[in-house]
Image (cartoon, rainbow over all chains, first blue to last red; front, top):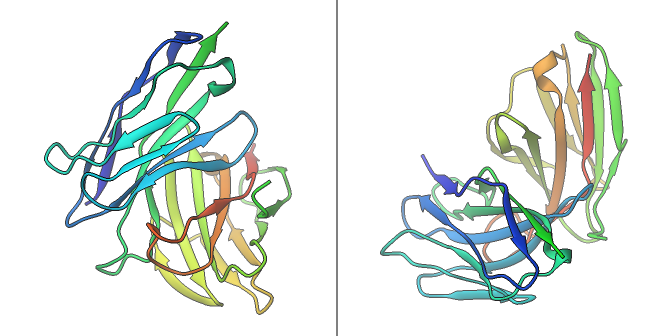
Length: 115
Length: 116
């Protein structure tokens, strides 16, 4: 079945450091890919998405590119801030084959940014 | 604020009991999804309703059931509770039932269930 694998945390960085969180997926066909962020005590928020190969999603300085050849959707940010401390989830969704768009999540990566 | 509300925020109960979690989707959203977040299983899709009808089922136990009412709010019923049911339960809504790549899912703040 479909699955998402993302790097295990926690990840601890200093402010202004470069961030990469790796995410790879297994799915038939052409899923849509997402990064969600969960701040402490809150629900998940969509950070960015990509719906087809070579699409780049971007938001708030974060970027991820849909790479079909490597089945990857790595999250990057050039300079992290303390306010980026949160748990980040990679997810996929298929809108066909009986799926109604439900999300399949990776296990999450906790990011802590130190001042 | 996503516009999705969930009640209660916290729920503590005993094994063998039954509880009901409530979700109100964003205004105008027809689709409601339920997810369970636990330490060992991570975030898992449970069930989806669209405009009152069940549309998709994930890893939902037979002891769990859900429904969506005419006013589009949804309830998740958990019965014969076990210690392992302790988790954070999220509801999400979207304007349509499929094509998640197009129609974003908006998540509520969750209900934290503790089974003692």
